[in-house]
Length: 358
Image (spheres, rainbow, N blue to C red):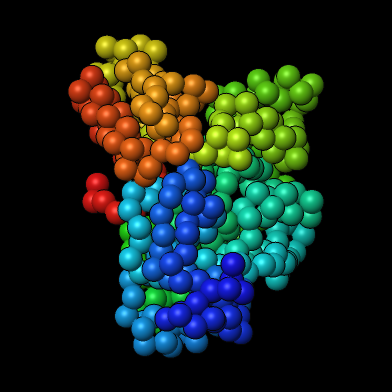
C-alpha cells in the first residue's frame, strides 16, 4: 500500500505522489499476470511530476507509464520505475451553441468520461463506450470501436516529457494519430500524458455502419434516428455480449489489430475466402477481420494450461487462472504463426508487451 511504501528501505509518501518499492503488478494489469516493478509511483497531482523526477536515482531509471493495465502484457518483471496517474477531473473549459471543449485529467476512467459527456448533452464518444482503461491511455492507442476513433475529437494533448522533465501541449496534428497508433505509442519511453482536451459537438449524425449496431438498436425498439445515449447503450450491450468481462476472466480486450493489407492482396484473399470480412481504406488498402482469420484457423477457444483464447471472441486472450505472461505470449505467437501459415497475413499485437521485442 502507498502508506507502507519504501524507497531504499525508507517509507515515502510525498506531496502529490507515493512510492512503492518492489511493487507487485498482478492487480495492476487486467490479464492478472504476476510481475513486479523495481519502483512504482502513484501520482495524484501532475504538478508533482518535476519533483518526482528531481530525484537523481529516479531520473536515471527506465520509466514505464501504466494506466489501468488493460493494454499491456508483462512477460517479465519491470526493472525500472512505473508511473501511474491517479489524477481526476472532467470540465468544460470553452463552449458555444454547437460544441464544447472538455478538459479531461489522464487518471479518469475512460468510460466515466463517456458517460459524463452524454450526461452533459455532448455527442461523439458514444461508440467508444465501455472501452477499458484511463483517459490518458486513450490517445496513446488512438482508441477506436464501432466506426469511431478518438482522434476525431482531440483538440490537444498535454504530456510530461520524461527526457526533459517538463510539460508540453501537442495539437492534434502533432499527435500523429493513425490506426491504433500515435506518436505517444511510437515513443513509449518519452511521454506521460497528463490531460487531453476534446472538442465534442452538441449534435451529430450517429455512426451506425459497423456490423451489429443497427440490429442492436432495432432489438432495443429504437425507431428512426437514435440519440447518442441510445447508440451508447447499443454499444454497451454489444460489447457486454461479445467480450468477456475482465472482472470475471482476466483479459486485455482485443489482443490483435485488424491487419491492413494492399488492396490486391485483400481482393485475392476475398476471392479465395468469400466469407472474409474486409473494409476498404481508399483505393490502395483494405482492413481485414483478425477475429475471422483466427477463427478460420480453428484457434477460437484454444487453451494451453491456463492460457487461452476466449470462446466468445477469437481476438481475446484470457487467463483462466495462473497463466504467466510468458505462457500467454507463447499462445499469442502460436496464433500469429497459424494465421501467417494459412493466409500469409501478419497479425500485430495491440497491447504493449513488456519484456520482449516483437
